[in-house]
Image 1 (cartoon, rainbow, N blue to C red):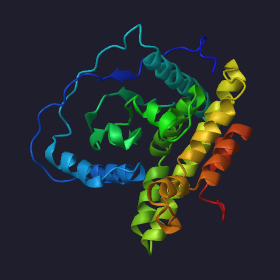
Image 2 (image 1 turned 90 degrees about the horizontal axis):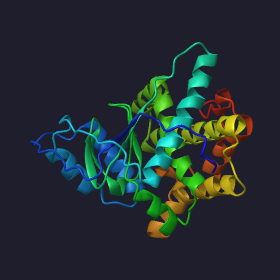
Image 3 (image 1 turned 180 degrees about the vertical axis):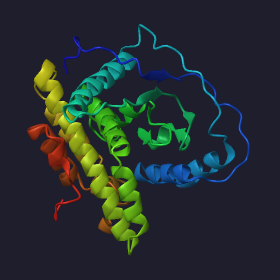
Image 4 (image 1 turned 120 degrees about the horizontal axis):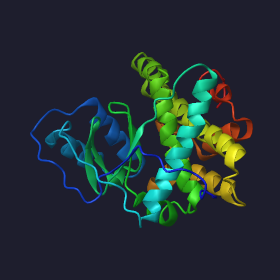
Length: 284
């Protein structure tokens, strides 16, 4: 990726190296349960997340520090986030709206969030409760070594996907999906709503890449292939086969490798958010 001319976002909180604030015992919230599901998705024992979430006070304040000037990975993240802000700011403005940019939190190990206790083992995630994207940068090593999906554009895709969830949140799509899941006739049907939500976030990531490249020519040879490899590597079928040797389609919550690649490419090709309606198509 060519990011030399991209600005760094000021919406980055660096909590790395900060200790978790002390907590009190409490109940398990919806956000913690959701994170446990994310943990399962990344092959982590969900009980670890539930136990931590049960014992931590999630609204304890955490003071962030400035990104070190000699930290290229943090600066890379800040530039990618800045690029998403510029892209979505223009997209929202075209329809007469103002884009409410999310914060991005860098953390190491674990950190409190409005959705429960965030853990590095759960991978990057978006919390609608505080409208923040959370990422432990060690996940990029996981992408390279475990998922065999290296490359800077693959790393940028991960951030753009989580920003896609933010857009779904602020536009009300996430709430509608949650309501539909509550009315679903089966767990498999509820999971299908989740799959379509995730694939739409993949498409939104493609829309960002389309506009960012059109504005500043950020893409280099091989970048698109990196993102496609990353999307394929974290498909439900690929992850389940890696973890247990076989896939269970009714349990999918994020989509197959083929579906994730298809919808990212859809956004990348057309650059139109209206073409990311994964909920109105019969086959995804």
